[in-house]
Image (tube, rainbow, N blue to C red; front, top):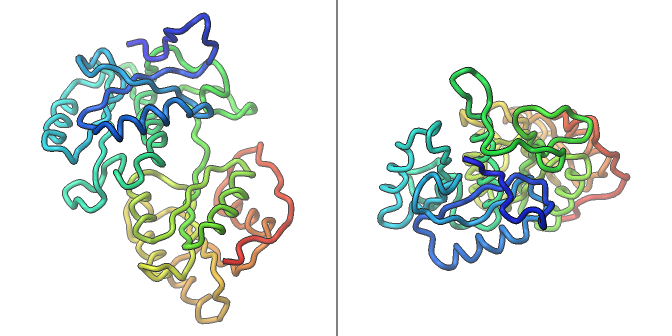
Length: 299
């Protein structure tokens, strides 16, 4: 299947691989959201377009709404298709409160925010799918530029695109989440922010992060308890955790140490201190840029 064939050539010179997405069970509102996201995702490493769902050979990704009556049946049928033959990768959409499925790729509550990330992750699974001879398979032509592959200019091209390392910020203040995200993205990392422990744990169950930065004063769960929960979860036990809080007492510092935190930062904090703390936990790559010194987060 030639997923990256550009049907608009020679008029369209976009070098990014093109992947076709078939939707199963999505309502009109969600389909409209998908179309809008696809149309405006100009900086995404891949391009996505809607495709008819008539046959698996006509699309590369299957976006299945698991909350509709026949969603699970459709997912079971698509899951039984031989991946090497069909090339279709399943992306499931569900609800966070459904105890029967804790591993859905997308949750309806944050559908538009996480849509591209879930589809990119599914494409990466496709590109990393091994052949019997041990080689790596691309759906269509492999990326031909650093922009298409997601690789940095100073990194060699490999069989699959390189994903920027990702940081999860859990803090009740939208202003601070935005400021910390901007500082982290300035050193070559991706950043995502949520306001509650519940949202943070849900994201940790959906995708991999290289670092978690959290506040102690959360509305639903104490931050130290959240740090312990992250340590106890099998999928996130090795993820470094940094506490960013206003609490500076010796007791709180000890509680952070007991919870297994890798760093303890007290607000307000300079961008340089934040950068150095992040770089001690993860390595963003040789093209990380310096961040000017300044003050962060008064909330």
